[in-house]
Structure formats: structure tokens, C-alpha cells
Amino acid sequence: MTAPLRPDLQLVANWVPEGARILDLGCGDGDLLAWLQQHKSVRGYGVEIDINKVVHCVDAGVSAIQGDLETGLSDFADGSFDLVILSQTIQAVRESEAILLEMLRVGREAIVTFPNFGYWQNRWQIFKGHMPVSETIPFQWYDTPNIHWCMLGDFEALCAKNQIQVKQRVVMDQGRRVSFLPNLLGSLAFYRVGP
Image (cartoon, rainbow, N blue to C red; front, top):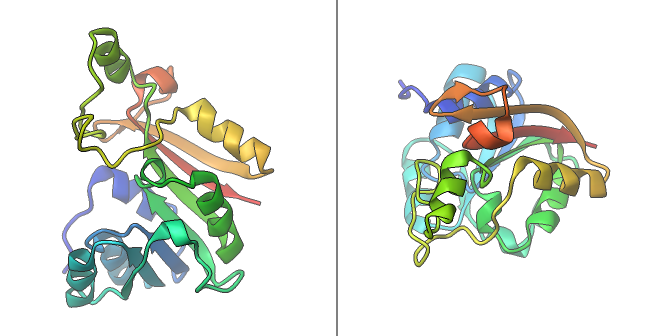
């Protein structure tokens, strides 16, 4: 039996259709894929750069390969997946635009989640003279894997530039949905996008 998912992963799981073919990029320990396999009968793969996390995935019955997203998704054919997931990883890769385009080459739709840098507590910490550290950005400036800071409007502008349709957007803070002033009051953004 798989453990309950964190609220952010549960929201992603809610968007995944039963029996879908899934590619989870930056899959970590494979918790999301394991849950989806058990509860939604998905077929899928995870891609993770950390070999120890790949081993954990395999031990948990999740098909995962070690790979660096920066090298692209050339191992996967066009349209191989119904859905490609990139959860809290787009801000940690150098070629965010290229990866987004590759996701929609190999998948019919994509789910992208990221910490919202426009969140009021992040802004407040910057105002006080410090780089933000929070639940969704849990690193100090000197050891963060995050190299791109993004707000809702930034991601939506990237989608518009590439004629990518935003099919659904949800913003959360501390596991709860935020609808009023989402760019200010939401710490985590979720997008379901497609051609």
C-alpha cells in the first residue's frame, strides 16, 4: 500500500486520467508514480538524475531511469505519452523553455508545477535584504538548485510565446487552493498545458 501523497502531488494526481501513459521528469523517489500505478493503473516511467533516487524507485516497483533533463528527451519518440509531469523542477534546469517544448513533443499534455517567486513571503524576505527561504523554496542562496525564479505571469508568457495553451491553473499555499490574488498569496503554481 502506498503512503498518502503530499497535497501538491495529490493535486497533480487528480489531473491524471485512469490508465494514462505517464512520463515523470525529476521523479525523485517515485512516490507520485507509485501512487498513480496503484490507484489509477497508469503505465509510466520516471527520469531522475540522482542514482540513489532511481534505485529507490526501482525498489518500490517504479520504472525509472537515470537521466539529465538538460540533454533533452531524445530517447523518447514523439507522442509516446499521454501526459508528461515536471513537478517543482522547471526552476532548477538551465533550458526551461527547451524542456517544456520537449515535454509537449513526447506527450499530448504536460503538468508543470513550480514555486511562485511572487509569493508575498518571498517578496517580504527580499525587502528585508535576504533571498527567500520557505516551504516551497527550502534552500539558502548558496546551495539552492533553483537557477530560474518564475511567477505566474512569467510562465504564462512563456506558454503564449510558444503557442502553448494553458488548460488549467491552480495556485496553492500550505496545501490549500488560492483564488484571490494568486500571484501574491500562492506559494506553489500548477499548470496543465497542451498544444
